Image (cartoon, rainbow, N blue to C red):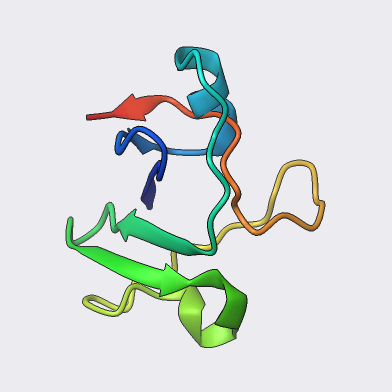
Length: 85
């Protein structure tokens, strides 16, 4: 999935991509907007109520959650990504 940054409304693949391209800090939020790369539809998720069933696109059932390269407890509070306008 791509994730829409709540601060600048641009699309990124990860928080690191946002940090590499933007001059501002990523705004923290619990409601995220995602775009599925398989079906290209967008959807919202409330990450304060996130569970295993939320790892799938609600439109095409694509499993979009992957293991982190550096595992750590982060609720995608965005701190960098490559822009997807």
